[in-house]
Image (cartoon, rainbow, N blue to C red; front, top):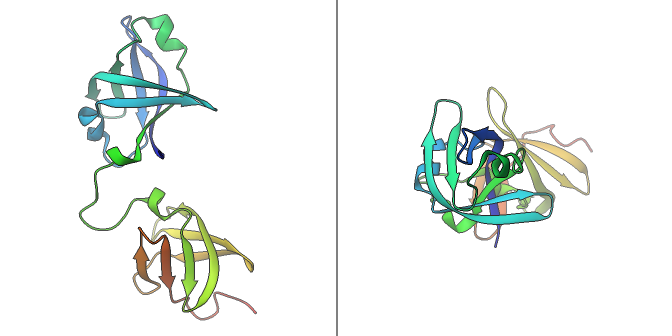
Length: 166
């Protein structure tokens, strides 16, 4: 099952094993709804039942079953906080960045490559597509991105003139 990154453990908080977490999500309030998290570092993953989560202005205080002391919490400093992809609530409109990464991108019938990264810029996001022509920076604009099929893992675009140099 795929996992989605939602935070990083900064350090222990208090003496009872609580974790201070930096949220890496557009909605930190989601921590309050979690029943389980996956703490991971490298190839090591451990699942924990969530006891409580208190959302603060710039971090989340997370208490999980099995981490009950400052020493135990210290061992998880720098670990990623993840959830199962199935736990991510669907968006009313649009898609999550992680749903776009790995998508095949086409301009008409021409395969451009695979979307490998989403860059957030001031004006609009940019999709990095890697393929036979190298790396293409596709502006995430309605005039360029014509169709996104999340389940089919396909994005159809109409590239602006001059974006591809032949």
